[in-house]
Amino acid sequence: MKGKINLMLGRGIVSKVTDGGAIQLIRGKLMDGEDYDQMENLQPYGFTSVPKAGAELLSTFIGGNRDHPVIVVVGDRRYRLRGLQDGEMAIYDDQGQKVHLTRAGIVIDGGNKPITIQNTPEIDMNTPLVKMAGDLKVTGSVSADGDISDHGNKKMSSMRAVYNNHDHSNPEGGRVGKDQGQM
Image (tube, rainbow, N blue to C red; front, side, top):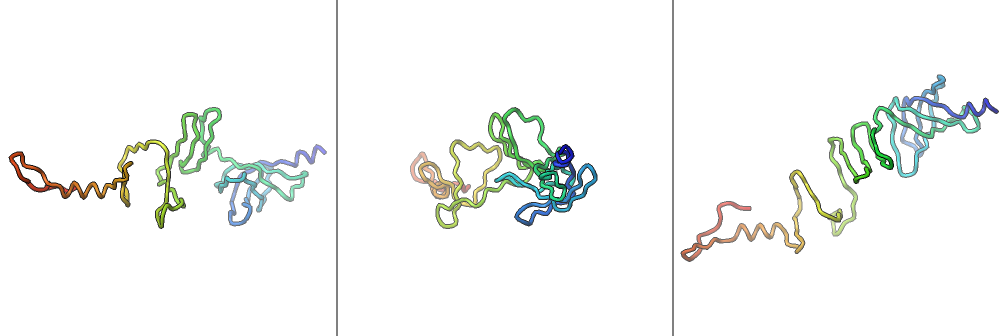
């Protein structure tokens, strides 16, 4: 009995990952020199990853039968975030990208890569909708391919047309013409 219990767990290193099927398969070498080609990697619902070669794994062998390993967890100390506070959590990768739920709020770090929001519902044909409650503070420039509207639904293109077409009054009477600069 004691021998079967000792055979139920194995610790090892990931060599290769095959991620095309319904369940992810990992090739890995266990600490006692066993080399397995197709260990099933169970992942929690809603979360998935493809571990890099060199990541650590913990495998279980049901009933101590070493013919069918099932990986229960893969970790990689090379990229693990450190210094989180009690109750915090994060998702992260080896490129510095992360979503960190801190005690003070959510921090999204793109790892110097673009952040894309896609597949949002459309408010009308070909106009995706992204909603945000609260104020927006941008420390860089804002660029829009479409029009911008204010709370009165006045479009910036309409305001620009009024500005570009207005005349200035001459204090001595009459009009002096349009500004040289256009908005």
